[in-house]
Image 1 (cartoon, rainbow, N blue to C red):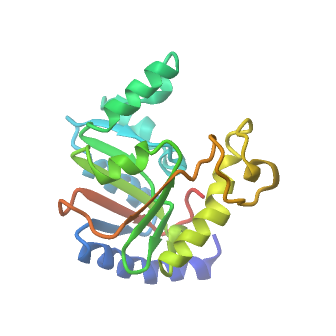
Image 2 (cartoon, helix red, strand yellow):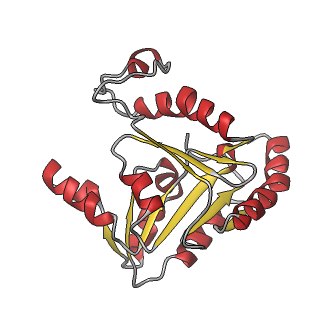
Length: 213
C-alpha cells in the first residue's frame, strides 16, 4: 500500500471510529491487520457459537482458521451437503452468539451501508445474533451516504459478482451496473444502519489497510 494512503488512514481512522461510537456502535481502529485479528478474537468469547455471511475480509484475515484452531463452535454454510442444508445453516446463523461480517461502506460520520442478495447478512446486522462483529478496511470509508450508494452499486456489487461466473446479471458480462431486476441480482436488499440498537450489539473493527472490495 502506498505510504501516503497509509498515513491518511492512520489519521482518519480514529475519528471515524469515534463517530461510530457516537452512534452507539462499539468501534475500534487498528492500524495493522495483526492488531485487527487480535481485536476480533478478543471480541468473540470462546464459548460463543459463531457464524458469518459472505465476506472476503474475514477470509482475507484468516479468522475462520484461527477460530478452528481454538476449537470455536461454528455454523459454516460451506460444510452443507446440499442447498437445503445450506439454507438451514444460514437460518441458524441468524440466532448465533456472534456473527462475523464486513460492511460494503462506512461513512465518515459513522453510518453503515450494505447491499445483499439473499438478505441473511443484513438481517443479522439488524436483528438476531447477540453480537455482530464488522471488520472493514479503511478503503470502505466514504464521505457520506450518497457516495456509499454510488460506490457500492457501481463498483463493489459488480466486482463481487465476478466471484460467481455463472450469475446471469448484466454486471457479470460487462462489469457495469444496469440496475437489473432479474432473479439473480445481488442488489436485492439495501440497508442503511444509522444507529446501533441495542447499544454495543455491533462491534466495528476498522483496519488501516485495504481489505476486501
